Length: 212
Image (spheres, rainbow, N blue to C red):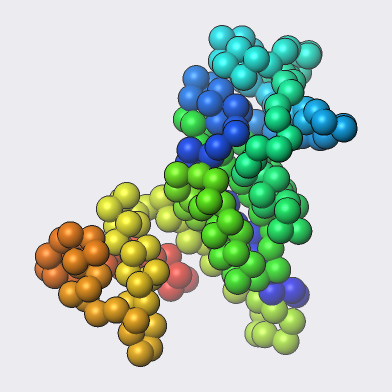
């Protein structure tokens, strides 16, 4: 078995993404795109044929498929589209949908390191990027498959912020790149609050990782 990963990323506030804007009114699924010359054409489905929502992106209705309506619109191909940023790294996007203004991408990657690179690039074109879940398969030669699902949605926004800041400052490295006092000062919180948030966040993540 290969050692790849499957990840679902929530991209909040993606730039140049009318689909995310449409999803503030109605869930969007089956997002695809293509480019011919100077024009990029994007297609998506909206449940319930919400023409008011699709009008946000100046999308034209194409056809009905069951309870869904298919729309298409043209956009600037030179903009910093989140999906094209990912593809520019040589990573296909397996699935795209949007909900409540957030773009949700499903990716299949060769390693966690590649996932980190993708998240770093997306950070430049979005307000926030979070990993909703991560499934990791055992590499060849390892003992069986070891798939682990980590749902970051179980963390509060504050817990994610504290955990991300501590990680980026090197708090979890050995030797540490920053101590607890420095991390707390960067977050403008006390040491006891830092310890509480870190303990809660790590406890939730470890419970998922170590669950039988």
